[in-house]
Image (cartoon, rainbow, N blue to C red):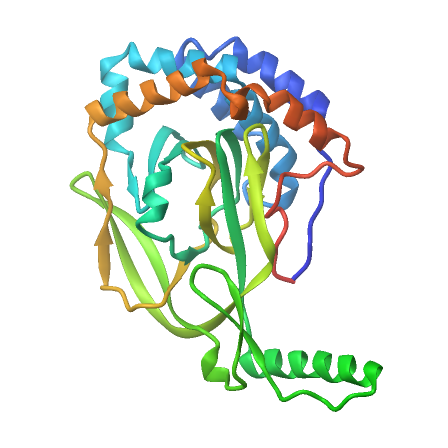
Length: 336
């Protein structure tokens, strides 16, 4: 695996923000403008698309633009029904599909803190490249990778031996580091079997009678381990996710809202679970009434201007002091 860094194009971001502000009061005009911008990207998604994706996502997520856009949706009953028909509850959050183009989508995700005290997100990948802007709250994620338990044990043993040699002591017994489903590293016994093994599935979403249905295919079992520390993105920050990345949302900072702009699907998604799954599963739909409530809730959060929203510019200023600008994380982990 390797890291990918890119420089934020602040001039492009300002240009996109100005242009978006001219269209946000009309969802139809905004969708047409956004479709035109997305059409400039090459047919095949690549990490080089990230600066424009981020500039567009930031332009739409600016509080002034986003609040006007969301308010305009509430004024159109037919649009509310249309958006609700393609939106659904995704395990631990509501996924509101604001726009759905031929090769892109604009989604708003709303996370409830209480949900994460009751359940845990499966480790998974995505079908597409996407950029996510944290509008409110904060999100904590763990990046994962498939590991060879024997290689992991050998690596840990070598580190222990080298440590003992430098102090003149005898080598320690072999050991391994196991990772719980929650992402917490723990010292364990020497057996490879002590490293968690997950059921790996490939899944393909389809729509049947207006309901999103996921057909899954078993890919056997795999050993997974965490990559580096947990990563955080707070209000005013963005992150990019590559389709090859396995990740899980480990927690949120209060009620959290993100705006996600993604490209066309380039692969099938995978997920890993400690327990076996059925061959299909469905997502619970969101009603027009529930959608109205969600949008109104987000607008109220933005109106309050609490610390996570009002400090957006401060957050951006702090990020801007870095020598190399990058999305908060996950830009990042691509397979070599």
